[in-house]
Length: 315
Image (cartoon, rainbow, N blue to C red; front, top):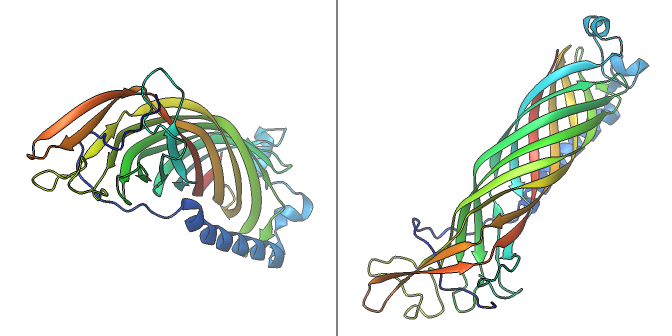
Protein backbone atom coordinates (compact mmCIF):
# COMPACT_ATOMS: atom_id res chain seq x y z
CA UNK A 1 0.00 0.00 0.00
CA UNK A 2 1.26 3.49 -0.64
CA UNK A 3 3.04 2.83 -3.95
CA UNK A 4 2.11 4.86 -7.00
CA UNK A 5 2.41 3.61 -10.56
CA UNK A 6 3.75 6.21 -13.01
CA UNK A 7 4.92 3.18 -14.99
CA UNK A 8 1.72 1.26 -15.61
CA UNK A 9 -0.76 1.16 -18.58
CA UNK A 10 -2.75 -1.24 -21.05
CA UNK A 11 -2.88 -1.83 -24.80
CA UNK A 12 -5.05 0.72 -26.61
CA UNK A 13 -4.31 2.96 -29.65
CA UNK A 14 -2.01 5.91 -29.00
CA UNK A 15 -3.24 9.45 -28.57
CA UNK A 16 -1.59 12.68 -27.38
CA UNK A 17 -4.81 14.57 -26.77
CA UNK A 18 -4.70 17.83 -24.84
CA UNK A 19 -7.11 18.14 -21.94
CA UNK A 20 -9.99 20.51 -22.73
CA UNK A 21 -10.89 23.44 -20.51
CA UNK A 22 -13.32 23.10 -17.63
CA UNK A 23 -16.92 22.37 -18.64
CA UNK A 24 -18.26 24.94 -16.17
CA UNK A 25 -16.31 27.77 -17.83
CA UNK A 26 -17.60 26.89 -21.27
CA UNK A 27 -21.21 26.65 -20.12
CA UNK A 28 -21.42 29.99 -18.27
CA UNK A 29 -21.64 32.31 -21.35
CA UNK A 30 -24.36 30.20 -22.97
CA UNK A 31 -26.36 29.94 -19.77
CA UNK A 32 -26.03 33.69 -19.05
CA UNK A 33 -27.23 34.63 -22.53
CA UNK A 34 -30.08 32.15 -22.25
CA UNK A 35 -31.27 33.61 -18.93
CA UNK A 36 -30.99 37.21 -20.19
CA UNK A 37 -33.22 36.41 -23.18
CA UNK A 38 -35.72 34.58 -20.98
CA UNK A 39 -35.91 37.36 -18.39
CA UNK A 40 -36.20 40.05 -21.06
CA UNK A 41 -39.12 38.21 -22.65
CA UNK A 42 -40.86 37.84 -19.31
CA UNK A 43 -40.39 41.48 -18.27
CA UNK A 44 -41.30 43.14 -21.57
CA UNK A 45 -43.87 40.70 -22.97
CA UNK A 46 -47.61 41.04 -22.58
CA UNK A 47 -49.51 38.62 -20.35
CA UNK A 48 -50.82 35.65 -22.29
CA UNK A 49 -54.51 34.87 -22.29
CA UNK A 50 -54.10 31.79 -20.13
CA UNK A 51 -52.06 33.62 -17.47
CA UNK A 52 -54.41 36.57 -17.18
CA UNK A 53 -56.89 34.52 -15.15
CA UNK A 54 -54.77 31.76 -13.65
CA UNK A 55 -51.11 30.94 -13.07
CA UNK A 56 -51.57 27.45 -14.46
CA UNK A 57 -51.23 26.16 -18.01
CA UNK A 58 -54.14 26.32 -20.42
CA UNK A 59 -56.34 23.24 -20.26
CA UNK A 60 -58.30 22.54 -23.41
CA UNK A 61 -62.00 21.78 -23.21
CA UNK A 62 -61.51 18.14 -24.17
CA UNK A 63 -58.87 17.58 -21.49
CA UNK A 64 -60.96 19.27 -18.79
CA UNK A 65 -63.99 17.22 -19.74
CA UNK A 66 -62.01 13.97 -19.66
CA UNK A 67 -60.31 14.84 -16.37
CA UNK A 68 -62.44 16.62 -13.74
CA UNK A 69 -59.32 17.38 -11.65
CA UNK A 70 -57.88 19.36 -14.55
CA UNK A 71 -54.72 17.23 -14.80
CA UNK A 72 -53.39 17.12 -18.36
CA UNK A 73 -51.21 14.07 -19.15
CA UNK A 74 -48.31 14.51 -21.54
CA UNK A 75 -45.32 12.80 -23.10
CA UNK A 76 -42.05 14.46 -24.04
CA UNK A 77 -38.88 13.71 -25.98
CA UNK A 78 -35.69 15.72 -26.05
CA UNK A 79 -31.93 15.91 -26.29
CA UNK A 80 -29.38 17.45 -23.96
CA UNK A 81 -25.74 18.39 -24.40
CA UNK A 82 -23.97 17.43 -21.18
CA UNK A 83 -20.53 18.17 -19.78
CA UNK A 84 -18.93 17.17 -16.49
CA UNK A 85 -18.09 19.77 -13.84
CA UNK A 86 -14.48 18.68 -13.42
CA UNK A 87 -13.75 14.98 -12.81
CA UNK A 88 -10.82 13.80 -10.71
CA UNK A 89 -9.92 10.14 -10.18
CA UNK A 90 -8.08 9.39 -6.92
CA UNK A 91 -7.48 6.35 -4.72
CA UNK A 92 -10.67 4.82 -3.33
CA UNK A 93 -11.33 2.29 -0.58
CA UNK A 94 -8.45 0.03 0.49
CA UNK A 95 -9.19 -3.58 -0.48
CA UNK A 96 -5.79 -4.88 0.59
CA UNK A 97 -4.08 -4.33 -2.77
CA UNK A 98 -1.70 -1.66 -4.06
CA UNK A 99 -2.88 1.95 -4.45
CA UNK A 100 -2.62 3.32 -7.99
CA UNK A 101 -1.71 6.86 -6.95
CA UNK A 102 -0.43 6.30 -3.41
CA UNK A 103 -0.81 9.92 -2.35
CA UNK A 104 -3.47 12.62 -2.06
CA UNK A 105 -1.23 14.77 -4.27
CA UNK A 106 -1.41 12.32 -7.18
CA UNK A 107 -4.57 11.91 -9.30
CA UNK A 108 -6.05 12.00 -12.79
CA UNK A 109 -8.03 15.20 -13.43
CA UNK A 110 -10.11 16.03 -16.51
CA UNK A 111 -13.61 16.41 -17.94
CA UNK A 112 -16.19 14.39 -19.80
CA UNK A 113 -16.37 16.07 -23.22
CA UNK A 114 -19.59 17.57 -24.56
CA UNK A 115 -21.88 14.73 -25.57
CA UNK A 116 -25.56 14.08 -26.34
CA UNK A 117 -28.09 12.58 -23.94
CA UNK A 118 -31.44 11.43 -25.29
CA UNK A 119 -34.48 11.65 -23.04
CA UNK A 120 -38.09 10.44 -22.84
CA UNK A 121 -40.66 11.31 -20.19
CA UNK A 122 -44.30 10.80 -19.23
CA UNK A 123 -46.09 13.11 -16.82
CA UNK A 124 -48.98 15.34 -15.98
CA UNK A 125 -49.60 19.03 -15.27
CA UNK A 126 -52.06 20.76 -12.96
CA UNK A 127 -53.89 24.08 -13.43
CA UNK A 128 -51.86 25.43 -10.47
CA UNK A 129 -48.70 25.38 -12.61
CA UNK A 130 -47.23 22.20 -11.12
CA UNK A 131 -45.90 19.42 -13.35
CA UNK A 132 -44.54 15.99 -12.45
CA UNK A 133 -42.90 13.44 -14.71
CA UNK A 134 -40.89 10.24 -14.78
CA UNK A 135 -37.99 10.58 -17.20
CA UNK A 136 -35.29 8.37 -18.68
CA UNK A 137 -32.02 9.77 -20.08
CA UNK A 138 -29.42 7.75 -22.00
CA UNK A 139 -25.90 8.87 -23.01
CA UNK A 140 -23.51 6.59 -24.90
CA UNK A 141 -19.74 6.69 -25.51
CA UNK A 142 -19.01 9.97 -23.77
CA UNK A 143 -15.28 10.79 -23.97
CA UNK A 144 -13.35 11.36 -20.76
CA UNK A 145 -10.12 13.34 -21.31
CA UNK A 146 -7.73 13.89 -18.44
CA UNK A 147 -4.15 14.29 -17.33
CA UNK A 148 -2.32 12.43 -14.55
CA UNK A 149 0.48 13.93 -12.44
CA UNK A 150 2.78 11.06 -11.50
CA UNK A 151 6.27 12.25 -10.41
CA UNK A 152 8.99 12.18 -13.10
CA UNK A 153 6.51 11.15 -15.79
CA UNK A 154 6.52 14.49 -17.61
CA UNK A 155 4.44 17.66 -17.71
CA UNK A 156 1.91 16.03 -20.03
CA UNK A 157 0.42 12.64 -19.09
CA UNK A 158 -2.82 12.34 -21.12
CA UNK A 159 -5.52 9.87 -20.14
CA UNK A 160 -8.78 8.83 -21.76
CA UNK A 161 -11.82 6.60 -21.21
CA UNK A 162 -15.36 5.95 -22.44
CA UNK A 163 -18.44 6.50 -20.30
CA UNK A 164 -22.03 5.26 -20.81
CA UNK A 165 -24.85 6.42 -18.52
CA UNK A 166 -28.56 5.74 -17.99
CA UNK A 167 -30.53 7.99 -15.69
CA UNK A 168 -34.04 7.53 -14.23
CA UNK A 169 -35.48 10.55 -12.41
CA UNK A 170 -38.77 11.52 -10.82
CA UNK A 171 -38.98 15.23 -11.52
CA UNK A 172 -41.25 18.07 -10.43
CA UNK A 173 -41.58 21.48 -12.10
CA UNK A 174 -43.38 24.74 -11.40
CA UNK A 175 -44.45 26.89 -14.36
CA UNK A 176 -44.60 30.60 -13.57
CA UNK A 177 -47.30 32.85 -15.13
CA UNK A 178 -46.70 33.26 -18.86
CA UNK A 179 -46.15 36.18 -21.19
CA UNK A 180 -47.42 36.43 -24.73
CA UNK A 181 -44.67 36.57 -27.39
CA UNK A 182 -46.90 36.56 -30.45
CA UNK A 183 -50.48 36.41 -31.54
CA UNK A 184 -50.76 32.72 -30.69
CA UNK A 185 -47.69 31.89 -28.59
CA UNK A 186 -46.72 32.35 -24.95
CA UNK A 187 -43.56 31.95 -22.92
CA UNK A 188 -43.50 30.54 -19.37
CA UNK A 189 -40.38 30.34 -17.18
CA UNK A 190 -40.09 27.29 -14.93
CA UNK A 191 -37.92 25.71 -12.27
CA UNK A 192 -37.56 22.04 -11.40
CA UNK A 193 -35.98 19.48 -9.09
CA UNK A 194 -35.58 15.74 -9.50
CA UNK A 195 -34.29 12.64 -7.67
CA UNK A 196 -33.53 9.15 -8.89
CA UNK A 197 -30.70 6.88 -9.99
CA UNK A 198 -27.83 6.90 -12.48
CA UNK A 199 -26.26 3.72 -13.83
CA UNK A 200 -22.80 4.06 -15.42
CA UNK A 201 -20.19 1.98 -17.22
CA UNK A 202 -16.57 3.16 -17.60
CA UNK A 203 -14.35 1.40 -20.16
CA UNK A 204 -11.18 1.72 -22.27
CA UNK A 205 -9.39 3.67 -19.52
CA UNK A 206 -5.76 4.38 -20.48
CA UNK A 207 -2.99 6.65 -19.17
CA UNK A 208 -0.04 7.52 -21.46
CA UNK A 209 3.43 9.05 -21.02
CA UNK A 210 4.63 10.68 -24.26
CA UNK A 211 7.07 13.18 -22.70
CA UNK A 212 8.74 11.78 -19.55
CA UNK A 213 11.36 13.80 -17.68
CA UNK A 214 13.99 11.28 -18.81
CA UNK A 215 13.17 10.06 -22.36
CA UNK A 216 15.87 7.37 -22.08
CA UNK A 217 14.68 6.03 -18.73
CA UNK A 218 11.98 3.55 -17.76
CA UNK A 219 9.34 5.52 -19.72
CA UNK A 220 11.33 5.38 -22.96
CA UNK A 221 9.41 4.94 -26.21
CA UNK A 222 9.39 1.78 -28.28
CA UNK A 223 11.52 1.29 -31.43
CA UNK A 224 8.70 2.59 -33.63
CA UNK A 225 7.91 5.56 -31.38
CA UNK A 226 5.33 3.63 -29.34
CA UNK A 227 4.28 5.53 -26.21
CA UNK A 228 4.43 3.64 -22.89
CA UNK A 229 1.05 3.42 -21.19
CA UNK A 230 -0.99 1.85 -18.41
CA UNK A 231 -4.45 0.30 -18.84
CA UNK A 232 -6.76 0.85 -15.87
CA UNK A 233 -9.64 -1.53 -15.01
CA UNK A 234 -13.06 -0.29 -16.05
CA UNK A 235 -16.03 -0.09 -13.72
CA UNK A 236 -19.81 -0.01 -13.49
CA UNK A 237 -22.42 0.70 -10.85
CA UNK A 238 -25.56 2.54 -9.80
CA UNK A 239 -25.75 5.76 -7.78
CA UNK A 240 -28.42 7.96 -6.32
CA UNK A 241 -28.75 11.18 -8.31
CA UNK A 242 -30.46 14.55 -8.00
CA UNK A 243 -30.83 17.52 -10.30
CA UNK A 244 -31.89 21.20 -10.39
CA UNK A 245 -33.33 22.88 -13.50
CA UNK A 246 -34.39 26.30 -14.76
CA UNK A 247 -35.76 27.19 -18.16
CA UNK A 248 -38.57 28.52 -20.31
CA UNK A 249 -41.42 26.79 -22.11
CA UNK A 250 -42.78 28.11 -25.39
CA UNK A 251 -46.34 27.13 -26.35
CA UNK A 252 -46.10 26.38 -30.08
CA UNK A 253 -49.67 25.12 -30.42
CA UNK A 254 -52.50 24.43 -28.02
CA UNK A 255 -51.07 21.02 -27.10
CA UNK A 256 -47.38 21.34 -28.10
CA UNK A 257 -44.70 23.01 -25.96
CA UNK A 258 -40.99 23.59 -26.59
CA UNK A 259 -38.97 23.57 -23.36
CA UNK A 260 -35.44 25.05 -23.21
CA UNK A 261 -33.61 24.52 -19.93
CA UNK A 262 -30.32 24.36 -18.04
CA UNK A 263 -29.70 21.52 -15.58
CA UNK A 264 -27.17 20.74 -12.89
CA UNK A 265 -26.99 17.04 -11.97
CA UNK A 266 -25.08 15.30 -9.18
CA UNK A 267 -24.81 11.65 -10.18
CA UNK A 268 -22.63 10.42 -7.31
CA UNK A 269 -19.29 8.72 -7.92
CA UNK A 270 -17.73 6.80 -10.79
CA UNK A 271 -15.53 3.90 -9.64
CA UNK A 272 -13.00 1.71 -11.38
CA UNK A 273 -13.12 -1.90 -10.22
CA UNK A 274 -10.56 -3.64 -8.08
CA UNK A 275 -8.44 -5.42 -10.69
CA UNK A 276 -5.17 -5.64 -12.62
CA UNK A 277 -3.58 -2.67 -14.32
CA UNK A 278 -1.58 -3.54 -17.45
CA UNK A 279 1.78 -1.73 -17.40
CA UNK A 280 3.32 -1.58 -20.88
CA UNK A 281 6.97 -0.45 -21.11
CA UNK A 282 9.93 -0.86 -23.49
CA UNK A 283 13.35 -2.22 -22.61
CA UNK A 284 16.63 -0.65 -23.74
CA UNK A 285 16.87 -3.19 -26.57
CA UNK A 286 13.40 -2.10 -27.79
CA UNK A 287 11.49 -5.18 -26.69
CA UNK A 288 8.05 -4.71 -25.20
CA UNK A 289 7.20 -5.86 -21.70
CA UNK A 290 3.85 -5.99 -19.93
CA UNK A 291 3.43 -6.28 -16.17
CA UNK A 292 0.15 -6.78 -14.33
CA UNK A 293 -0.39 -5.44 -10.82
CA UNK A 294 -3.60 -5.76 -8.82
CA UNK A 295 -4.83 -2.42 -7.42
CA UNK A 296 -7.61 -1.01 -5.27
CA UNK A 297 -10.52 0.90 -6.80
CA UNK A 298 -10.23 4.54 -7.85
CA UNK A 299 -13.12 7.01 -7.58
CA UNK A 300 -14.25 10.31 -9.10
CA UNK A 301 -17.25 12.58 -8.47
CA UNK A 302 -19.59 12.83 -11.47
CA UNK A 303 -21.43 16.15 -11.67
CA UNK A 304 -22.70 17.53 -14.95
CA UNK A 305 -24.07 20.69 -16.56
CA UNK A 306 -26.47 20.30 -19.45
CA UNK A 307 -28.52 22.34 -21.92
CA UNK A 308 -31.75 20.55 -22.78
CA UNK A 309 -34.26 20.99 -25.64
CA UNK A 310 -37.56 19.11 -25.23
CA UNK A 311 -40.84 18.83 -27.14
CA UNK A 312 -43.81 18.22 -24.84
CA UNK A 313 -47.14 16.91 -26.22
CA UNK A 314 -50.35 17.18 -24.19
CA UNK A 315 -52.55 14.10 -24.57
